Image (cartoon, rainbow, N blue to C red):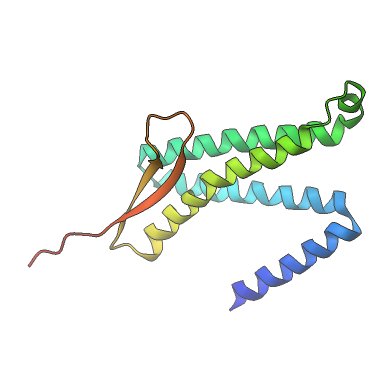
Length: 147
């Protein structure tokens, strides 16, 4: 119940801030990423699955590219407009979406480990592990019951 209220209040405040002080709101929302990176790092210290570590590294790579394009857009906007290349903000949206594509399965993986310990989460990639661009997913393996 507390989480519900905290999420609701945070959503309302950040929405209002986007109209009142958009720049402050943007920096505040980006600071949430540092908290998520810290939580991911703490969970990775306990995790032995190399595939999970690899997915976290890919997520951080996408996030670094996204935040770099956002900072470049914010701080060097005049330069990019002078050379007629005002696309860094759109790059930010695409790259942060890719980062979240990897973050969401990570959060689900760690949540399953804690909330449903009888299941073993297994990280998979669609369409195949060998493809350069993939969509990660979590498959739950049920433990075998022995009679």
